[in-house]
Length: 79
Image 1 (tube, rainbow, N blue to C red):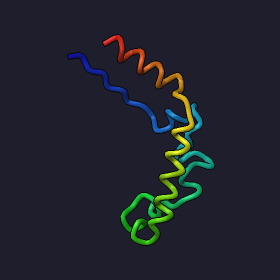
Image 2: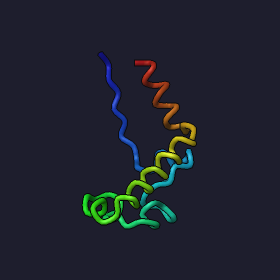
Image 3: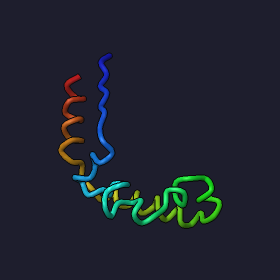
């Protein structure tokens, strides 16, 4: 069985319109990490955390794969 491993940067999906975390106007510009990505944030405001991840899911669901993702799929088929 052949396997493929890809090491990529966190912004790989940016070309598809998926917001990154650290870019200007990225997700951490609008939210503190501790508020939406830590158990204490959940304890303090579960609705904020749910809204954050629901919005992220909706954004990802509305996009198409970028060239990098398409290229990885093509490479995988060649294995």
